[in-house]
Amino acid sequence: MVYGYVRVSTDKQNTDNQRFEIEKFVKARNMRVDSWVDETISGTKGISERQLGKLLKQVRKGDILITTELSRLGRNLMQVMSFLHQCMERDIIVFTVKEGYELGNNINSKILAFAFSLSAEIERNLISQRTKEALARKKNLGEKLGRPKGFSLEQCKLSGKEEVIRKLLQEKRTKQYISQKLGVNRQTLRNFMKNHLGM
Image 1 (cartoon, rainbow, N blue to C red):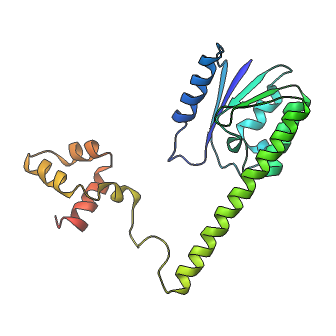
Image 2: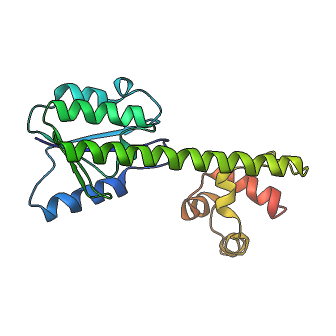
Image 3: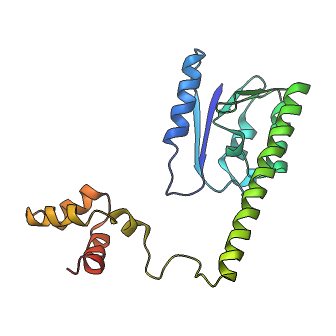
């Protein structure tokens, strides 16, 4: 059996790009994905709390698991290594599309899995540290941190589209039509018109 595993952290993301990458990967190797595991959950959650944990219980010797990158499997070294170790012990082959790795039950795979999981964790820690330092510096300079009160990501989508909205209103288009065209809900459009267009 060939399993495709895709994961995003929040429901504001989707797994379409990951699926596309995996489908392209299997097509180039004359393979096909027999079963997909698709989940929306933080990689910091334990594997047993995720669909990935259920998948690990059902895979058999010789099965193949394909994911876009090691970071889809977990967010820290121990989590990824634990998962890969269990796969290797049971002769499950893990392919990562972006990194181009084939991880099986051999010493080369174990060294690669360790090295790249460690690199990924170091990179995440460095990014986190740089972010904390930048925020501390801004706070020290007296800058306000965080989003402005009343800030909405959806309202941000409408920034710079004031003229488009005015034009559509002049054309007697309904608010429902405009909100659908611009990819936001009607309440967001109404709030934006009130706060930014004085309507």
